[in-house]
Amino acid sequence: MSNIWIRTCFAAALALTSVAGNAAPVPGQPAPAFTGTTSKGESISLSDFKGKRVVIEWTNHECPYVRKHYESGNMQRLQRALTEEGAVWISVISSAPGTQGFVSPAEADNLTASRGVYADHVVLDPEGAIGRAYEARTTPHMFLIDTDGTLRYMGAIDDKPSANKASLDGATNYVANAWAAVRDGQTVEPASTRPYGCSVKYGD
Image (cartoon, rainbow, N blue to C red):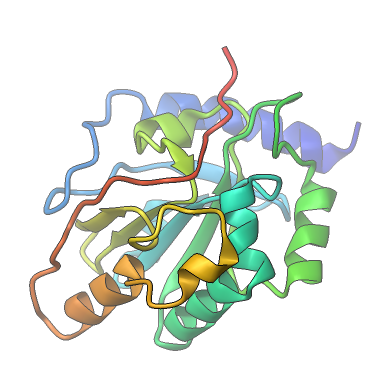
C-alpha cells in the first residue's frame, strides 16, 4: 500500500470530522467548508481559495453521463474556458472502495492525463465526507462558489439529462451561464437545478 494512498485515507477520515455539522448547501449561503486530499497527496481546503471563484465537479469516469461530457471534450472545454478566466476547478471522486468509479491516486492521475483534463485538483473522497456535506447526488453534479465563499450555483451541468453525446447539440450549459452571471455581477438564474447522471457511489 503506497504512502500516498495511506495519507489519502487518513485525510478522508479527517475530512469527515471537518465537514460534520455543516449546513446543507443553499445558493446565496456560504458553501460548506471542507478539507480533502488530492491525487497528488496534497491537503487542500476550500478556505485556501478565498478570493477566487471555485468550481466543484463530482465525477466518476465509468458513469455513462460523465463519459458523454469527457469523451466529447465538452467537460474539458468548459474546464479550460473557466480556468483561463481564473476559476479554480476541483474534481471530486466520492466513489467508495469496491464501487463504480473508485480509483487509486495513480489511476486518478492517469485519467487526468489521458483525457486532457484541465482540473486544478482532483480530490479523492472515498469516505464520502465531502460529497455528503455538499449533498452531491449524481455524477456529474456541479457547484460554483464565489470569491467570498458564497455558493452561487448547484445542480446539473446542462439542461439535457441524457447520456447520448448528440444531446449536447443545443444544450444550455448552466455552469457556463452561472459563471458569466457571477463574473458580470448579475443574478444567477437558475441558481439551482436538478442534477442528472449516475448516483454517487457512497459506501455504507
